[in-house]
Amino acid sequence: MEEQQQTLLRTTLELPKIRTSNQELEHFDPRKIRDVFIKEAELSEDKADYYTKSIMLDLQKLFLDGKMQEISTRMLREMMCAAAIRAGDIETRNMLAVVGMPVSDVKKLFFNYNSDNSNQIPCEEFFHKTMADRMNDEFSMLAIYNVNTKYGNPALSHLNRDIYIHDRDYPGRPFCYQHSARYVFRNGLYIDGNGHYSNTSRPPKRLDVAIRHVCEFLGACSRNWNGGQSFRNLFWELGPFIKTQQKKAQEKRTSAE
Image (cartoon, rainbow, N blue to C red; front, side, top):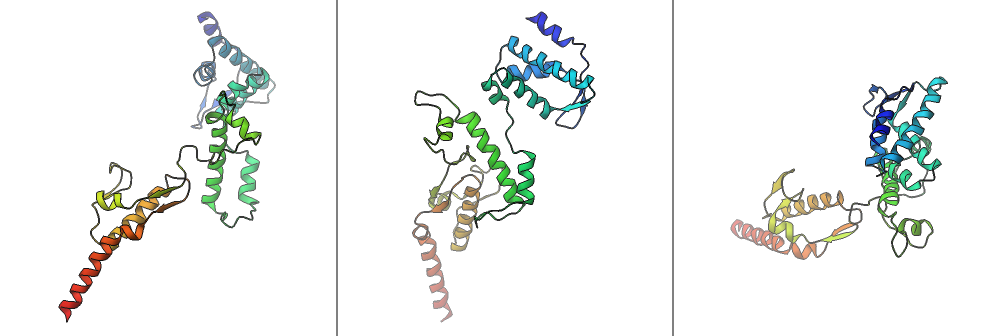
């Protein structure tokens, strides 16, 4: 095995240079392809060597034919996926796949967007969210729900419309939630949950401060949940603050008289 690896590393093939994700141009190193196959796709060394050699031969032909002088890491990963597909190894392809949108779909989103949904107003933030949703959706279907269980494969069941998986575009977030403002009123405001990364506030004593706290708390929740957010019995929980404010207002009127 070690002899095969050394043969692979001592290659004398003429290959294009690699354009890294940092836009730097580097010499071709087959060990990096082999390592990705082993670490990301969990392949054996023999199988990783086989795929790597296949890709190297394809690249050499393109380079010698004058069709490719350099190749990006993204294109190289696409060739790795293609090698796995040619071998009928769909599991390896899924583990190496890149999630996202085709260039043509991004162009349509920016220049030809059309929707009857009044909640979807075309703007830069909406376009950014749409692209992120697409990436998360594909990741969910490839890596989270694509598992074989005794009840079947959830991803395939969704695609066959046997079941419906909601919120695939937010796989790591909870959905709707109804909060209680009493926690904020009793403990103060901790936007990040513990006060390590954001400013904190002590428990409110006035009605206007309490209202600002619940607004900031709800805004923070909207960044961490996917569905609708609300408070239950908010006016009842604001009761002590309202009572205190009414008492102070009454005392002020009395002293004025």
